[in-house]
Amino acid sequence: MLPLRHHELPPTAGLPLQLADLRPGPATLASELAAQLDVPALQLECSGSACLLIALLTLRALQPQRRRVVVPAYNCPLVAIAVRQAGLELQLCDLRPGHYDMDPAALRVACDERTLAILPTHLAGRVADVADAVAVARRVGAYVIEDAAQALGARQAGASVGLLGDVGFFSLAAGKGLSIYEGGLLLARDPELREQLARTAARHVPRRFAWECRRSIELLGYAALYRPGGLRLAYGAPLRRALRRGDAVAAVGDDFPLTLPLHRVGRWRSAVGTRAAVRLPAFIGQLAAQAQRRLPRLRRIAGIQVMDDPADARGTWPFFLLLLPDEKRRDAALAQLWQSGLGVSRLFIHALPDYAYLAGVVPPQPMPHARDFAARSLSISNSLWLIDEDFEAVCGVLAAVL
Image 1 (tube, helix red, strand yellow):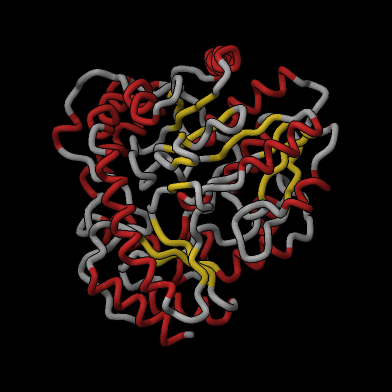
Image 2 (cartoon, one colour):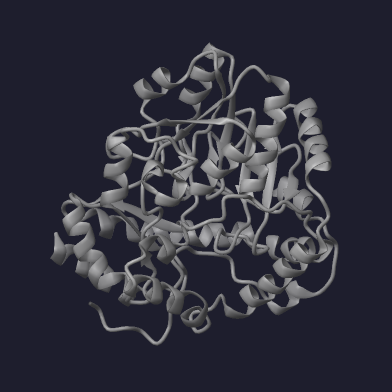
């Protein structure tokens, strides 16, 4: 294991908040980001998963005879929880071998006249194959919801992700680029569908003072501790406790309640995000430039596959997502790196059918490629705090293991 650093780097590169961001001000976060992304409008909600739930409830009302939602089998557990909370049926789709996209043949088998929506996922800031999902959806009369929770600011063919499908959503959770600790943004191309999403939120999302107080306090903590010094306490210590007891799911934060909290985002948190959003385009550009400098070094390590974007896309780079040749060598690398403080981690621990606590939510299905992806993948932070010397130390461990 590498020597433990006195600092702790985050597993994903989030935009640090500044003291000036915390002052009261205009609560115009949704319109500020809509202008940045050049999209018609954005709807601010309390989380990315809340956005997905609102989208599913809206689409269910439009096509009540359809009940199935097709999602990649390697995904955040919150996706499965949102589908269940919407009263819908989860249909898993296996991945392409060695890739984050849904397998085209498996997707066509999974979709029929019962399919309400397909959920292509822009995983780890990378840009997914939404066009194929749209083609399948149009064939069976379903909708496409772009899960861009990890890809705020990503573009394809010059346009923001989220516009190829019928609905898209972004996350503003801790570490997700711009953050108000928990938050989400809904997007729809069609003006009528945007109105329906807003009406659904008005019906289902209450004002809950206690929840907003909690999130505001957590945001203050995030502003104070999202630094290499503070993350030792806020992230590193819980990580190491979870790993000592052998709980990898807790170590990466994959353990979620089975009910999504819904509440309206308050003016202060929106104002904090509005101030910070001014710095977001430059921050995304810095991460992209750093990624382009470091990608060649990773690609020179024989046996590593680095997830990248299609030719016409420009994703965001919160971290690098890698596949190693097998689980044994992936685990050997993590044994040295996961607790090093250098931002090496795993994205999701399991394919969705393999989370024990989701046994009543996710139907057991054989998903060999998703399970293989979970078994061989690891992530390296692209935080601007990860200096070249430390990045080279990570690469040295990977090269030695391989």
